[in-house]
Length: 302
View 1 (tube, one colour):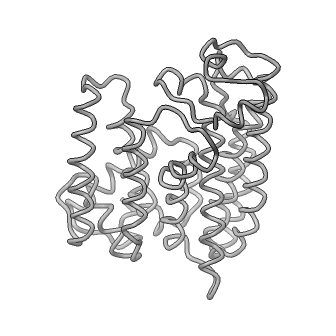
View 2: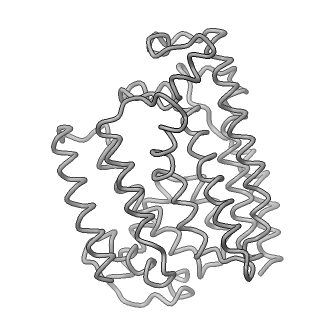
């Protein structure tokens, strides 16, 4: 509750919404949640609100335990998306997640276009099972990940006159995070009937969807994964230059998030690219080795 007090959130129903978003973040986004703890308390609830919104929409689409049919999921996503966008336009919401989200949008003047793009990508997951090219994939990735970084920038704060550059860097970092997840989750995504690695790029290495679905790690698949990993690292390198444009008290959080999220590809290499048999995970030791120095920098910045 001290975070809510620091953020100036007092209304009981609004507080409940923020707490629910925080619960979703702590339960499902452990790395993201750890990075959020590096922010000043006054900023954390608003980041939780963004996560809660994204997680709830994702749960509608991808909850493997759901008893809803694909068509029922589509209708539920359409209903919830329409209502939430209307709430953002109206400036108020009665939804258990929407209350915190709309309050955050109002406080920081976050463009509604970011949320429209995110919900569009969630709807794509109900229909699109593969992407022919990286350009085609980017339509999905922009909405599912890049806009998350863009939503964050007003909350994190930037140096005076540098917001435009910070937004460009945040977009690249969001894309890098998502691409790292795609590499780690090749096997898991196949279970959902999806392939997020561009088919034309796979073809360069002699890989097609049928080969992936056999779930046998081949030299061709390893080379294809190495190509994708290099793209993540290139994007991270380009995006990291923009972290210095953020407000000093926000930088340690994003530095840690960058290292841990993009570090997923290091873990894929560490398990010898066995993406069909194992799920690459950042070790507790690595999390601590990143989080402790970042925490010291965060305390100093405050």
